[in-house]
Image (cartoon, rainbow, N blue to C red):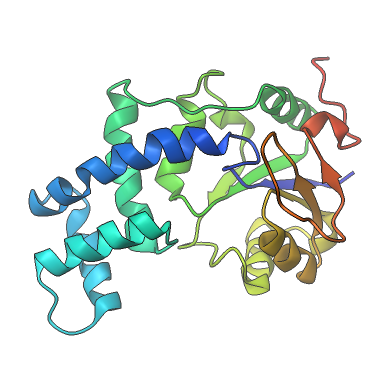
Length: 228
């Protein structure tokens, strides 16, 4: 049994369609207006984009870069920060809700009962993660989580150094951390850092997981996930 579990979101605890078919279009439709209307938080986003672009980048350049990164599904932190700001409006307005596979709330509850701390590590911003778990189709799941990591406070998800950084941050030995993801590259990076890495093959997943063990849902993990 691991003392800590770290979870990916897309394709692991939530269907990819819930993110790519709902959240992403919602954000894209609003990116330009948020930047041009100087909404709260966007000045920092614009400054970060300009820093990445270099030179004297105008607002048009910033908008074009953000839309391009969005369409490429780039994991750049300024874009993810802006996504979170936009989605916050949607969640608070009741226009958006987190969507989870049915085994996930049961697993979170059981891990919590057993004293296993659970963390989220996703390319989506910490703000977006908290909204996704607190306002979901399964109720408020935020209380089951010990904390959140994104590419800003955790680092790139395909870099082993990120997993070492997170292990230090949560004060847990690498071998005592179980990482669950549908991404082979992320699992490889976690395993290189000494974590226990397990692939999650949800419906429609075509990932080749290589040497990593694979489960189709969290009931197969060897830790009870039934309601006690």
